Image (cartoon, rainbow over all chains, first blue to last red; front, top):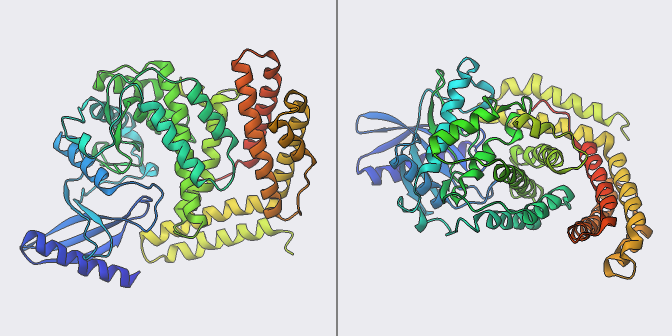
Length: 345
Length: 150
């Protein structure tokens, strides 16, 4: 690790010196836990007589989510330009000469944390309100005006839902180590019961959940993180993902461990100006769990074939797949007591 | 042979959490060690129950295929169902049982799709095998669920 850190320190210092046309010295660098899709490093950089904090996201040799760094960066840039709280995007670099892999750099947002375990419960309601209102604001944006049509695959309100099903069904088929009968049943169900067309094409964050935003101790959200799965699509996709029982496993009545589901939906509707029609939202909730299984299966495949040894990949592959299958069986089995649907009521 | 393997793996996880994790050089290593300890907890559960889970899956799938077989007689799927029911695991190692379960599961998935298609076409007979398959899927998921602090 020390040699890797030294190489990063030297490469980043040289890169920043060239970008800022002033000597930049990386004084400290440490890897941030989590960050399954990219290696994430926190740096202190001295330049022009001052020190500033930066976050560097480095493409891994493999990751939990196979995504394009440019899409992630441009989505965050668009959100930042629109006034949403995100880290300030600074550089996107594809040249391998600096540190051997592509990377992006943002400003560091200090004094916050992202862990779902440390949520300030005395500010739970305010944090929840802010969380789903921000998601509504993302849904309200016009992604084409923001230029995102140039970096994200085109889609239509009529087709975006089943295109997503096809994509994640393909991921599961390609990466599964064993057959997944519950996921297969869910995929067939999604195809046999397509939702109505999206109310609009939105910027879909793709992984909007507790744990993917930075919050301050007083319960404010200072930055929305992890835009690597951003795409154009139905805004209900993000809402359903944010409500998935996986993110409130021990408190299924509290979406994202923050708010009763109905309240979360109401805040999203108020901020987005859209309607979360129950049947359409139910379809997207089933989809969310299929997508989850796709992510977890991909991660365990990476771990299994030895491309990556990060334990978070194995944990996702084993534990999250198990839980996501429980959720899908709860949703779809004719014998189910629908514990998770009831929690969402 | 370690008959108390699950407990042994559990002790290793405890050792990581109580002795090694506090000495981690940084947050990243501490997080890794915590996840490895958690993973060992899952491995311990599979160590104890793995054979039972796989044999139960195979027995349940074969029972469903035998019951549903007359509906698919003469078709390619019917032939695959018959071949699957007649097949025995190549051995009792977890890897061998897993491979056998995977083969049986692929047939079951195709039968489930065919049953759903029949139900959608209004064929009343399809309801019973669909319910039977979901009974199996519920049990399949429950058998694999992990007890975890995460």
